[in-house]
Amino acid sequence: MAMAVVASAAAGTLLTSGQAMAATAAPDSDSTRAGAVVASATRTDDVTPVSAGVAPGTSAGTVSMQAADGSGLGMALPADQDRAGVRTGDGTVVYPGAIEGGSVAVQQLGDGGTRALVTLDSAAAAADFRFRIDLPEGARLEQRADGSVEVVRAEQSLGRFEAPWAKDANGKPVTTGYRIEGSTLVQHVEVGADTAFPVVADPTWKGVWNRLQAASKKSSEQAVLGAVGGCVVGSIGAGAGCGPGAATGAVGGAVKGGIEGFLKGK
Image: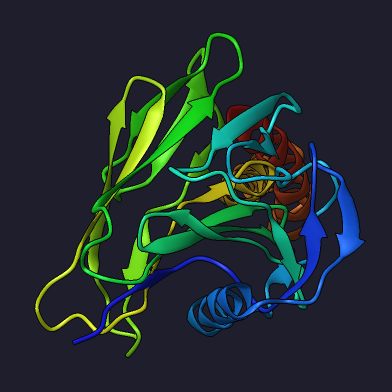
């Protein structure tokens, strides 16, 4: 059965040197196919056009991303061929033929995340894809129990690569996972005899979004604790009653928790 792993969307604009988008080019069959596979696999409702300076002009370059504290980090694409990027109709940047038997692509997400995608066009393609991460000074990669990989500095979360996923042309999940080799994130994709290609696999980076989620969670937790404490104080200490005390305590707890969650990232 024909097989493939995909990472892109419908093509239209050619990227040249550096990060700049230079000229509009007619899509060729390779970029059109790669783009269509990625669009089908990822759905594009959460994709926004890749901003200038995020995707490299060629697959030999580095994807620029932002950590939760505002510092920058880079992700090298797992390319073994230097191919020019082509911007698709939905804003994805695809690099057809950047790997043996496949392609890579970059997407920017509406919540601030960044997604790299790998397309395997046959079982002959590699099973391991190495993403070198240019970390902020003092930061390191840490594996989490849910399969995600977090970037941590001084015990503070700067963001994370979400648990990886991969699926075949029929939408069937394909076994995949990360391992860490120094500052390199390696994604292993395990295809089988019944895998229908193309298969799409991705690492997705969430920086600021990770912090906002943590802030929301911590805010809710502290609001409950604040409400309970405020009720006790209002009823016994101040004599104001449970209702006013709880309301005041909840507001204070929510603010405190939100700040703590955003600063700590958890």
